[in-house]
Figure 1 (cartoon, chains in turn blue, cyan):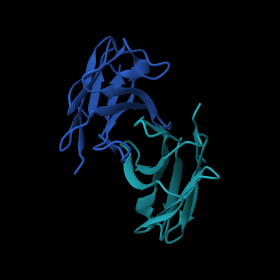
Figure 2 (tube, helix red, strand yellow; figure 1 turned 90 degrees about the horizontal axis):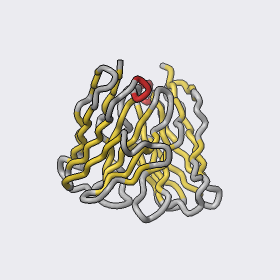
Figure 3 (spheres, rainbow over the protein chains, first blue to last red; figure 1 turned 45 degrees about the horizontal axis):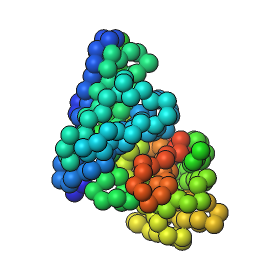
Figure 4 (tube, each protein chain N blue to C red; figure 1 turned 60 degrees about the vertical axis):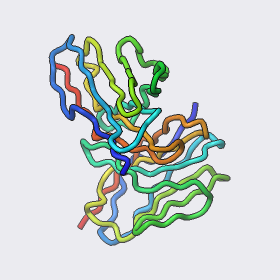
Length: 115
Length: 112
């Protein structure tokens, strides 16, 4: 149980393109989902906390206008990287938990490459 | 600033040996502690979690927590080449359900 599905797994696109990444909880409802970014040989850095039905909470230094988060239902959160540039190339991973304070379950990640 | 510290390694052990991975955290109010394994290019996979002081064993893995010393460790017995990966220590800071704070990870290499 507690499966988190993330799509797409790989995106390659031109600079200036907007890219949407979906994160779905398949067998549980997730009022809270988290979006992380991981650069090569670095650890996961929290970008934002996505709350169902309300605005996301962004970490310091993360541009909310560039990384749009929508958590429209209890099973789906989306991250849109607007006008992506090469420096946005990274591994984006979402996570969710079935119950608060229980271990988080991670999606398989999305590798974004901006040319 | 809440921090989680890990030795980046690499930690090299021969097959069959015990691998010991260590982690310290700065927030004394931290409640829950997790170890994730991450293979190159993949997302993290939960290995163990521990909430109470002492040891918690699951198969070849043992997590150890000492809240007084703000220290959590992961022991891997009978290490296998397939255990070669980066191990991430993560801390949940409080009961409010905030996100995990990750250490930078320790790279483990098990040689056959």
